[in-house]
Structures are given as structure tokens and as C-alpha cells.
View 1 (tube, rainbow, N blue to C red):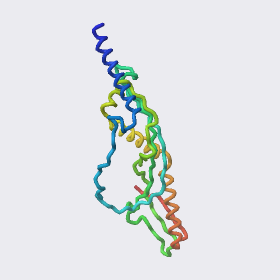
View 2: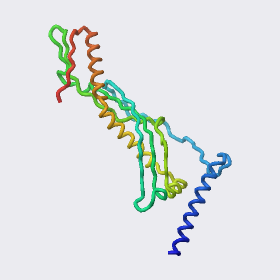
View 3: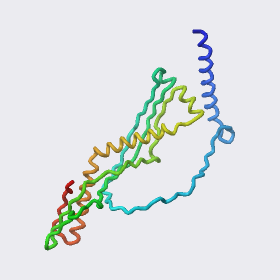
View 4: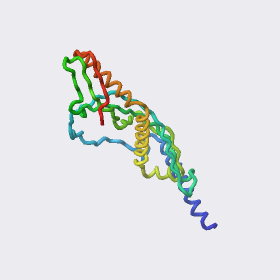
Length: 211
């Protein structure tokens, strides 16, 4: 097995030298660092693709925070050699709305003397999670030796995207279990009752629409 030791040792030494060189270059000011990056925004103008009218009442909004703990290990190598673990703090909001566009024929009925109004209202729905990129960030990251070497030569935007997707999914699940829809139903009911009473109705009944 001695003939294997020299190539393995050479690889390890090379990796260590590259990592040390990378750390040393970070100590130089960007003006003196030949590998420093300069960011230029060459984006094109924003194009308006479509406009649509909304018939929704935004009745409630919930703000959420989640810590995503994502760990990846190699099957046959220790995590110190090849593996990673990332803690990602995701902050976002979920809005609950009632779609008035789904009010069917006969959803609003009024008695003969216009004192009693009955509204059959559809249940509130949840918007997709709106993750805030300005307040979402990687809190901590651990990488194996080979992973850090790979970071020198290339980045992997898929890993960052995966963190955002996982955070959004977890927040969406939490919103569905938080009672946000029920709060939106209650707020919409109170809004309609106050509005119709201001129009002269003495009694306003808001009932769930039959599916």
C-alpha cells in the first residue's frame, strides 16, 4: 500500500496549499488582489408583461421566520473531507385573501324592506410565501476539505436556491397551520358587516358559501 501513499499525500498537500493561498489573497486589498472580483450591473430594462384586475380582499398577513438546517454527507467519506452543513435563516410573509370574484349568483340576498342582508362568502385562501431576500441569510456554513476546494473554482447557485425553496415550503406549511385563514375569514366578515350597516342595513349575516 506504500505506492498509494505518495499520490494521496500529494493531493492533500496541493489542497492545503490552494486553501492557504486563497486565505492569503483575501488579506490583500481589492486593488492589489489579482483575483479580486468587480461587480457590474448590465441588466436590461424591466419589461411589463401583463396587467390584470384583482377582485381580492387582502384580509390578513402573517410574518414568519424559519431556520433551515441542511446537511449533505458523502456515503464513503467523512464529513471533514467531503460534506457540508448550512444553517439558513429565512424570513417571509404569507397573505390570506378572499376572492370576491368567486361570488356566485345569489351570493348576496336582501329582504323586501332592505333591512337584512345575507352574504355567502367563499373561504379565505393563502398566497404563496413571499420570502424576503433582504432579511434571509446564511447564518453558518461548514464545508469539508474537497467542498472548500470546489468553492475556489466554481459556485453552485443550486444550493442557494434549494435553501430558499425549503424555507418557502416550511413557511407555507406553518401558515396553513397557524389559523391565518380563519383570521382572514373573520376580518372579511367584520368588514362586510360594517360596510353594509353603513349603507343602512340593520342586520348583516355573513355565511360560508356552499362548495
